[in-house]
Image (tube, rainbow, N blue to C red; front, top):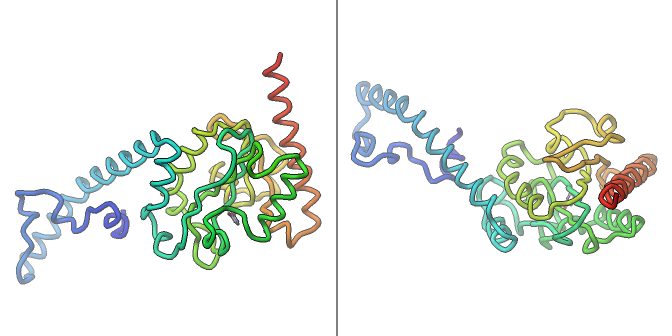
Length: 255
Ligand code: URA
């Protein structure tokens, strides 16, 4: 666990973890002897600190896992679990129909989303809206849109693993509350993150995957499609496959 994470969890400095022990006493002038005592104390405290961290992390996960929509949105709006909070303007919680059959998951907010607090509102968002329209869906019509991370990674870089990990409980709770019939991941970051895979979009698309028991289909990111016209046709195939998957579920439910 790195120092930043310990700090976020309010566990630094380590020597304050326990009260009434030698760890409470800050060493005076460092000497060879005191620094060796200190290092042996640090060795003792590390496993203990790890336990505290793990239980703090699992407390956080549990709280998030029990949140209702309002609580969840409030938690996200004040979240400081990773460094993205330092550079964000607005958190981008997600938007849409909270009982949607379709859940679209992107990567993370860009500049416009960071300003407006809503996912996919830039050029890529316009393309996503037309893709939805082609399916007779809309961002408030049977669709919910979320991202792997709720804060903008600076300069539109990919979210780091630790950032995605810290944000994951929020997304998991959104998924649990929505209970979508289908998840469509937009782009490599979302697909790889949810599938725990390092494979390319090209090899992940066209197959029916699953996330937490929910069918999952991989397609290209709309921002990529703006640059690659040839893959637009493939994205359309993916969406038709997605629509067929939902229809099949409905037919099965009617039998
Ligand atoms: N790209 C994403 O992945 N998500 C957004 O919300 C906007 C752009």
